[in-house]
Length: 297
Image 1 (cartoon, rainbow, N blue to C red):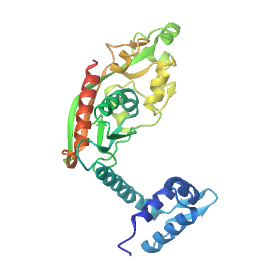
Image 2: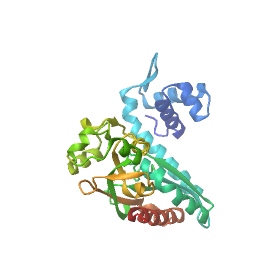
Image 3: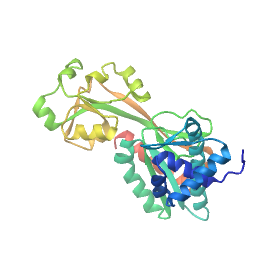
């Protein structure tokens, strides 16, 4: 096997995996379709493996390709981290810092924090990736993470920034039309907003709230942003961060004495980045901003 396979071949391989076709990968990567084809052929020859088979639906990855994907993604993450680090070299706070956060935190909480950070450090460039999937800091998928679970890896530095309270909320319009349930059991007579697919967070929440079950939900979405939008527009009753709801007077808390959950919040960075000026100022800004959010101030 060729031990000096160029990174660009793996880069193209990831592009084809993601796009499902040579033409799609060519557009995404900004190269020609014949170049994509040559890269895949060269990679298959070097690895002595068949990576894709053709079908009417496009290129289908083989088992070998799927097995290699995680390693190629790790290479891509490392290459991106190298570029971010290289761009930050020089005096002062400059370069690129990549932040990962959940959808709701990334949309509802972080923008003003990032805006203020950029006002203080205009040479800093911020990449914000929103996902409820935990991005891997060890693989450098991001530089800093806002997480709702404590990190387990020793190579990560974490700061606990408080506990965000969750409660049940509905809009004034929904309450005016449908009233307020007088007990948790009465939720069954209302339009309740919740999840569709089971996740680790949902399993954890279900242990704390036995009523939190899929069959109860009249409206289901795995996107926290979609659930929040449904609550705000008056579609039903759903779970919302209390500090977010307090910003919207039109949202009313439902059964506060019977339901409350606490969401531990952490800011996490890889220990190798502790002395990076760009990461240090960003980490400190996120800690201060999330402490303020968690306290409801």
